[in-house]
Image (cartoon, rainbow over all chains, first blue to last red; front, top):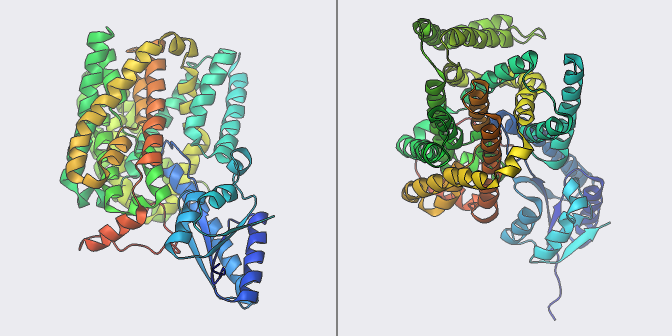
Amino acid sequence: MTPYVFDNVLVAIDGSEGAQRALDCALSLVERLGGKLTAVAVEGKLPAYAATAGEVDEVKQEKDRFFHRVLEEAESQARKRGVEMKAELVPGHAAEVISHYAKAHGHDLIVIGHKGHFLGDYLLGSTADRVAHHAHCPVIVVR
Amino acid sequence: MDSVQLAAILAGTIVLASVLSVEVGLSVALIELGLGVVVGNLFNLDANVDWLVFIATFASIVLTFLAGAEVDPDDFRERFGAAVSIGLVSFAGPFVVAGLIAYGVLDWDPKAALIAGTALSTTSLAVVYAVLVETGLNVTRIGKLIMAACFVTDMATAIALSAILITPNIWFPLFLVVSVALILLLPKIAPSFFRRYGDRVIEPEIKLVFVCLFGLMVVANAANGQAVLPAFILGLVMAKHYQHHQEEQRRLRVVAFAFLTPFFFLRGGLNVSLGAVFANLGLLAVLFAAKMVPKVGLIMPLARRYVPDHATFTTLLMSTGLTFGTISSLYGLQAGIIDQTQFSLLVTVVVLSAIVPTAIAQRWFSPDIEAEREADMAQSDAPRARPASQPVPAREQA
C-alpha cells in the first residue's frame, strides 16, 4: 500500500469559529509534518436576482473587505507559528471551488471546519460534507 | 387605514426584507416584491395612496438613472457590433412576439399589448451582473459582451416605454429641450459642483441629481409622458464621472436603497393579485413562453456566431428580466393601460424570468473562469487576468 504523504495541504477558511479550528489544525499538521500550506477563502454568493448592479457592487465590496481581513489574519497566525503559507481569495460556490482548487493545484489533503458561516450549512448540509463527497484527496473535517 | 399606519406596516416589511436578503442571499428587491405580494394580499393594503405613488414613481426614475450610471462605456466599445446585434435582437424579438400574442391571442388592447411587449422584452443587467461577478466572469471578454448587450436591450426598452407612454402636447418641445440641456450640462457642472459642495453629510451632490430628475419629471408630466429615457441617458452620461468618484455613487445608492426603491418594489408587489395569477395559470404560461421562446430562438444563432463556446449561457442570461420589466408594468398600470390582472401576470412572468434562466445558466452552462481568463490572455487586446488573491473591485475599471 502506498503511504499517504501530506506535503501540500489546503485549508478552507471563512472567518467562522469552525474555520479557525481548521486553520489551527492545518498549521499544527504542517508544523509537525512539514510541507506546503495554502489557505483559500471562497467569496461566496452575491445577492441573487438583484435589481441594480449597485446592490451587487456593495455586497461584493463588503465581502472583499471581510475576506481580506480573514486572509490577513490567517497569514499573521501562520507567520507567528513559523509556517510558510500562501493565501488566496477565489470567487464561486464554496464546496465546488474548494474541491476544484485542491485538484487543480495538486493538494493532497484538505482541512475544513465542520460548520461555516452560511445559513445553508445549517439548512442544506455543510460545505464540509459536500467537499468530503467531491474531493479527490483525503479531507479532515475539524469539529 | 391611515397613511401613518400604512407607512408603519411598509416600514416593518422593508426591515424584514433587508434581514431576509442578508440571511438567504437573495436580492432585497426581489424579497420586497415578494413581501409586497404577501402583505398586500393578507391585509388588502391600498397601493394607490398619493404619497406611496409619488415615492414609488420617483424611485423608478432614480432606479432608471442608476441603471444608466452603472453602464461601463468601455465594456460597450470593446465588442460594439456583437453587443448591438445581440442586444437589439434580445429586445425586438420578445417585444414583437409578446406584443402580437397579447394583442392577437389574449385579446388585450393595442396599448396594453405594447406594454406587455416592452415588459417582456427586457434583460436584467443587474441579475446578469451578479452571476458574472460571482463567478469572476465580469472581467472576461464574454462577461463584458453580455453586459454591453444588456445595456443595448435596456436602452431599447427605455425608448419603447417612453414612446408608448407619451401623448405629445404643446409642452413636448420643452420636454425635449430640458432633457437635452440636462444631459449636456450635468456632466459638465457635476465635477466642479461636487468638488465644491460634495463629501458633506447634507449631500448637496445627491440633491443636485434629484433636482435634475424632478425637473425631468415635471416637464415629462407636462408633456403627457414619462422621464424614463432622459433619466436613463442622464445616468449614462454620468457613468464615467461616477467611475472616478465611486463614493458619491455609493452615497446615492445608500439613499436610494434605504428609502426610495423599497417603496417601488413593495408597491409593485402590493398591486399583484395572487387570485388573478392562480386563476390565469394558462395565460401565465403563454406569456412566459412569449418572452422565453423568441429570446432563446433569436439570440441563440447570434450567440453561436459571437461566443460559440458559451452560446447557451449567453442566451439564457440575455433572457432574464426584473427591474425594467417591473417598471414597464407599473407604468402601464399607473397610466390605466393595463388592469390589475394583466399587471399581476406580467410582473409574475418578469420575476420568473429573473429566476428560471439564471438558475439553468448557473447550474448547467457556467463557463470555466480559468479557461476564459486563459483565452482572454491569448487575445492581444485582452485585459490582464487578475491573480485570485487580489481583490476584484466589483465594477472593475477597464
